[in-house]
Length: 552
Image (cartoon, rainbow, N blue to C red):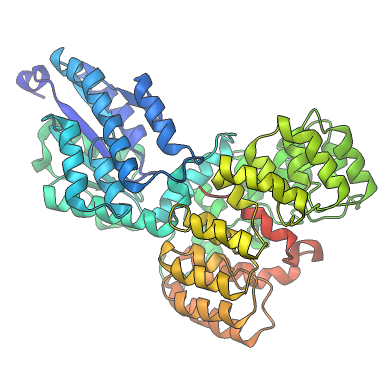
């Protein structure tokens, strides 16, 4: 780097889809620039903004209670956030002669606004007003497949669990993420922004490529191979599934073998190095369960919410003193006296867990215990307690919850029908389509299929909404979606192996797999399910609740 380059203050923006590794690269680039003598300023590291107003605006746009926030209003708030960063932090740093590295810029609201359906000209105009003439000297865009992004984010959440609720973007569905990615790629191509594909590059490799462009300009080129564009979960067609897993990074292999019996040896080898991820990936009767129970009890309890209390190895009672929250939550769907005694004893000390264990309890006991726990609990736990409850007392609580926290309230509608339910689903079909589709799980009535048709372009979530359903409408939906989402179609056939229509769809999914390990893991899972214990194999109305709140 020349002395002239060192002396000149620059604004460098790092942009792209979530999960592309921007934060890691920024930290490494900052370290390298400082080592070369440059003065570097970063307004944001990770998700933490140095600006208080910026943090408050971010919280406002992320808050799932704000489902009524319109795309245009969201666009303006995102622009306001970036305008605040520029005026409060960036302009003064540039005036001091510092190089400023920003994690996201005004390109973000342009991309998100367009992905939400706001006209491109409106997005550009709003961003220009916010920028007030200040544009980055260099914008770097990082690209990764949405499914790769999901794997990385999910792995991080498993390793580092948090009670923090996800943002509003997570309610938009998989197609929204694809539109965001496409828009970044389009704008990078149109404007000449360096575009880094980060499917396989290590952090060191990526940082080296980025530094080359930072130090020598966009003309230096990204210098990546075609392989960098190919997701790790795409392998050569015809590759054996377990052999393919062995070629992947261990964490990715664990993720892609979640619940599979054939991957027990993989989990056994990985357990000492990555206990939480190996525990999360175990199958219903995994030999590792005792070791998992000792080291990560919360995950050992995760699969027990359908297992009868008092069985041959009742981890709930054994682990109750060490992991009370997880043990009590694992009482879900159990209505016997022993389970109710545990709930009653812990109502005040662990209200969230007790409420979550009450899913489906629409009787006097359930109503009374909700009354005791309600005030001290969080809205997501309140919503879980109301799943499949259609009584007057449940609806009185649900109506208030829907008004105060609609995203949580919508999740409590899973498995219910009727005009009262459909009114709320219609209201938020565009604002939270993923949550609305999740609420349709198990329904085969005309109103449910009309909503699925309306929300088909939400993404693979429309197929998820008919998982385990054997009616004609569900199979028609699978036929329509199989070429776009073969892995989701395969997964939706759980419990339907005896239906001849399933065999035809499975054969179609096999044809479409073409080395896609997402598809293959679902097909292997279908084959293995017959070997699962009966309590884990049968997908009932109760078990539909397990993935209601999974909106990562």
